[in-house]
Amino acid sequence: MTTTTNATAPAEQPTAVPHHFLITLQTGDGRVVTNDGTIPVIPGAHTRMDTLKAVRQQVMEQWALRGQCIVLFFSLEPDQF
Image (cartoon, rainbow, N blue to C red; front, side, top):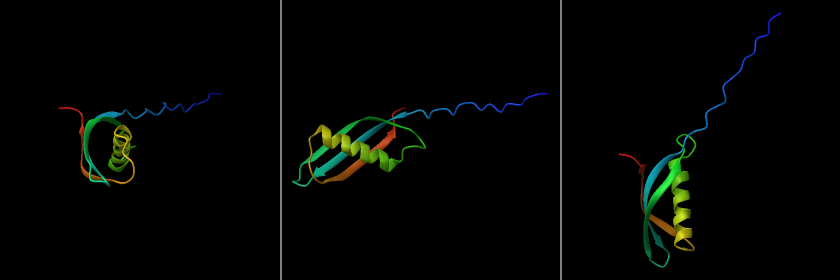
């Protein structure tokens, strides 16, 4: 008697790709803050909106911004040439 086993390879974990962002926020009192940096993005798992929200939150915490902030500008590109 022979036994057939259907072994499947473990699914590969998606690889995060560093993306460079540039964001400008305006606070409710009129202050304007611009920041840039890199953020890891997993293609197919993270959307552009997810990434915008994460960047916005990161910048608001970094600059200790409270309340509503309007996004005046947002750019997101893979961090490569």
